[in-house]
Length: 248
Image 1 (cartoon, rainbow, N blue to C red):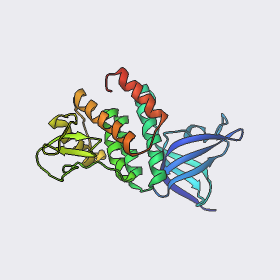
Image 2: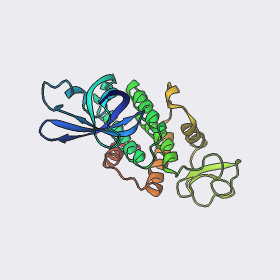
Image 3: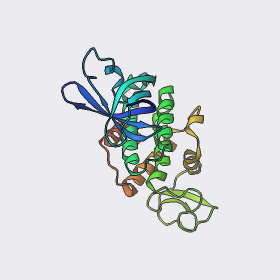
Image 4: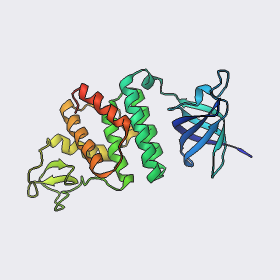
């Protein structure tokens, strides 16, 4: 069997037998695949340090299309050490990975891989993990088929006089269609659209006020609860952290 090289990132790991692990790896070439890391729980194994969640690199594997591939080695591109040093960043990264794992089970578009890697690299660089998470959450709604309408009023289709953003109404709401939805700031209306269209790889700074990011985060939390059917323990933990920091 020929050794293949695939670029990927480990999303989860499960102990197998007394000394091995099964890795869920999102790859650029094949999407989500399972890889057996034999003996990687042994202290002297060369695979021990590269068989954990958040390892991003080039995986040398015996690839098996319909079954578990076998890990030979990994050329690590990034092990996200800055994220691992910070509880808040770890919490966001864990949620992001859990969310992507659920999304790729429903839609294995290879663009999701690029979105994940770009987001984690920007968090590693020190940009706001909350803002980056919100940007990724908004983009992933496309692949779940439930994106909010943010180019026009979600009720009448008007592109003028947009005054608020409503998860209940599915996106923008104009003045003529407004009933009793809460009003968000004009800045939030513009930011949510920017979040959707921005290329994460090109982001160099995220100077967003606490109040604006709170409004966007509340909208996305409610939107996910209403339309996606995805409920994650890592998200619940993140909400507790956000409450302590006054985000929710």
